[in-house]
Amino acid sequence: MQIATLGPLAVDGQPVRGERLAAVLRALVDARGRAVSVSLLVDAVWDGAPPDDATGAVQALVSRVRRLGLPVVAVPGGYRLPAEEITVDAVEARALVDQAGATLRCGDVNAARGLADQARALFPEVPELVSAEDSRLFAEVAALRAQAALAGVGPFDEVDLGRLVAKTPPDEPSAALLVRVLAAQGREAEALEVVERLRAELAERYGTDPSPVITSVHLALLRGELTAPPVAAPPRQQARITLPAAWRRPMAALVGRERDVKAVTDALAETPVVTIVATGGAGKTRLAAEVARRTAAGGRAVRVIELAGLRSPDEVLPTVLGALGGADTTATGGNLGLERRVLSPEERLRAVAPDLDGLVVLDNCEHVLDAVAVVVADLVAAASPEVAVLATSRAPLGLVGELVHRLTALPDADALALVESRAQAGGAVPTWDTERALALCHRLDNLPLALELAAARLRHMPIDDVLAGLTDRFALLDDALRGLPERHASLWALVDWSRELLAEADRDLLQRVAVIPAPFTADLAAAVAQAPDVRRGLATLVEQSLLSLVEGDGPPRYRMLETVREYGEARLDAAGARDQAMAGLVR
Image (cartoon, rainbow, N blue to C red):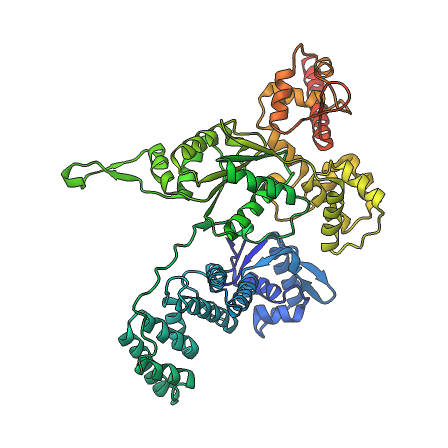
């Protein structure tokens, strides 16, 4: 989960309400995974004036923190927030600053500026800088960006340095850099004014003279050593990168998908539209995020548009336009071009498309597929050849020229590695052999999300109990992990999301063929479903990633994932129970 501390305290973008709740959460976050005693939490919240039942009050606040989705763990005498299960913007910014500093010392100014800009983006536009630690971190970010600009990389930005100089007491190293930045732009008078204001404030408020760092830069300014060069290289236009917070830094390593990352990246270089297609829980979004991160790291523009929250196809085009931007009016030519006409959404898309570059990612398209296909077709038709679209969906868009990358289940070795790494990360001590672990993977179809949920259970259960519990996998694995999107929080919700996209006849077919325990032919499916021709329905289930075609001896057969099969059986049993109840009412 993403925790923002550099501005208003927030969890996954949602602000944390209440001073006491915020104080407990900040104390747990600041501990960076270490245990925090109840007494320290009491001091953090009530500052020496605790209530009568301080322990109970802290326990109530911790319960509220857990309701935010954060996995607070009770330990003897206190609580801890596992650092491996959260991402903190201050920690991320510190890592970027350290990396930028090391890169700058190695002489790679371009890379250092990019890292420093990423760190700056984690702060609010106007940071409060209440704590000394946040102020130091912000000063380091501003210094790195200024040093890169002085070396000719990136635009000058004296605003952040000015904020640091205006603090009480003023940050003198930042003041020295501000003098250099202003002088480098030919603004010597403003640079001298910074020095004079600083000198007057230090004398009046503190009765001191400026430090040697200010004296040195003042002397260099008077000697003309900081004058701007006669010809300055124009600043390089930065690529537009809009990655969601959860995509900028993965919560856990991507296991077993390196070949898929390469295949999709190579396809995007040759094809205007690539769609990652797979059943729910196979890792489509994780794969797209990795491709997007690597594309952005290569200096190309990336725009990510999340569609899972849309409820109507009519929302697709406005959502895409909101992410791509573009003017909503155009000059009509009358009155010397001063009259303007409001553009329709379709016209806005065609107007903004030629100015786009890089990669556009549309995530979770399956429930608004037809509308997405229309938008993507119009976008690609009007955009330059350098623009590529990457979509994720449980079914293809169905466009001419679209390349479909079907994401299959993990190979055995990668499935084993995923379960073991996730279980160990959660504190589990593996007590199983490879044979039983492999049996667990096969029971879960080597499906990444199912394996993640099982690994979460392995943190508290032996593998034999997990294997036995898979007779009702929905009860065992549902809600095993916190912080997942609603449609991924349980296996039942995962399959139910796909089922809701089907027509009524296809839903009925899915439930009926779920009783077949092995790969089957269309004739067997027709016999079980008691229908003369089920081929079109089977094709729809394949398209929606609820069935797959497998080759072998004899004709190709249809195969259903075990999770989908058990879901279908449960739905069929529920439908049968309803029919019996209705028959009883009629009698």
